[in-house]
Length: 601
Image 1: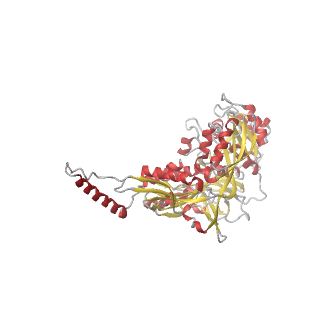
Image 2: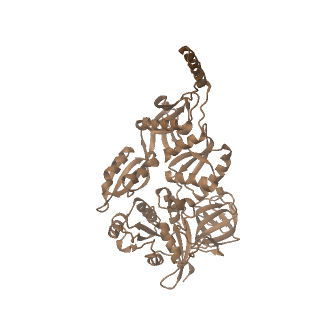
Image 3: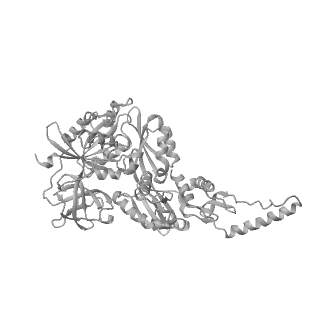
């Protein structure tokens, strides 16, 4: 039997919190890939953030050895993937490096929205799917319903499902045997020219760019000269290796295997996820089919709290982008916040994670502006502009119409919560579509919603209404015209660009009032009154006032005629009026942080 016939490449896919990382832990323990002394839960989740939140953010490759029932030793390359909708791009990239996928379904929750989305991703890549019903040890487990949902929703035969409990280690051998028997080994190409697909990268300050690769044809070893197909960069390979689960150097990465390549690539810009590595002398004519370019859906400005940190922030973002290709950024300036970057994200959780990684991994002290989406602005002269920053919105008199992005959402929920979900959809300016019965307990609802309405708090409210049982997945569904307006916040008649936002006309007054009230609490008192106004097109729609600090100028008057006190108060009044004309309102940096945090939390 050839060496390539003993290789299996597979991913674990599932909805968030269905037990992917726990199953990966059991695989590592069962195959003795890690000893008990070095073992810890969520072993592959190597970010503090992942451990704290109990979610997988990055896909994690690992190579394990497993002796099958036929007494042959197989090399299994496993990639543990995230489950949240914001990280579905990580999943699609991981699947491109595999021939099969283990589909995990929580026996207590059944098929969820992201389960359906991830199965569709795997089917598009023509992967073999092994269904596993996990958490069968739980009291609330309903295996029969899960089998029914497998057939009804995913069209996968129920008798193919393997019953398992990743926590108790039940069914682990059966899953590994199924991986060997059901998933095909990698195919050999006609020629042996080096072709390696880069499916992920990280930046190491000592070793430069480390590329995670799947070898499609040929082989690669230390000392080889390679070329990156898209950038044309030529470099010498310093080290190749596999993940077991730490990075372990090997002599050569051969066809079909998954591992890492360290070459003399120092700049994060030179390496691109989805690119093809080929030989310098013997090069392939065509790159491997990579991944579709991902389009950010949510935009926000990220600024350093200390303006001297602007250059380090840009460098940190470039390194982070290498590890997270769905994250985009470009420089911008703000009158209130100084120099910063306009950043694009796949969703609000993605935005939160990127900000947290910048703070923790790169030591950046940052502030983010209110999240926005891309609007299509049609001008009266027939021109169409794409606007992702409310500050760049043209004058209202030149605009013919504004269109906002719409998403098609599919929501799976217990039947009892249909009414609450419909109310939530309508509150968010959405349109309810068809409702299909999944089984006697669950329904699948379709809805069309404005993206701007769901990126803020839709997911949290859905979880609250359904007591945690509802789940949602969404995909872009074009653009639709809406009566949208630009709302400015003015402090002492000066617009504050960090709080400028595009809102629906009917919701502007409530949104403006909320912002004005929050600012009134946070802006410190000055020696004069400070008006805070929310304005749309010059019309004030909400107003709050920060009261002036007053000195008791009458304290020195002990009795006597009342006119003495009046004279002192009039003098003070004149001074306040003069101060209001020449005084500047100082909005402290932490006020921006507090307001923007309260809006995005």
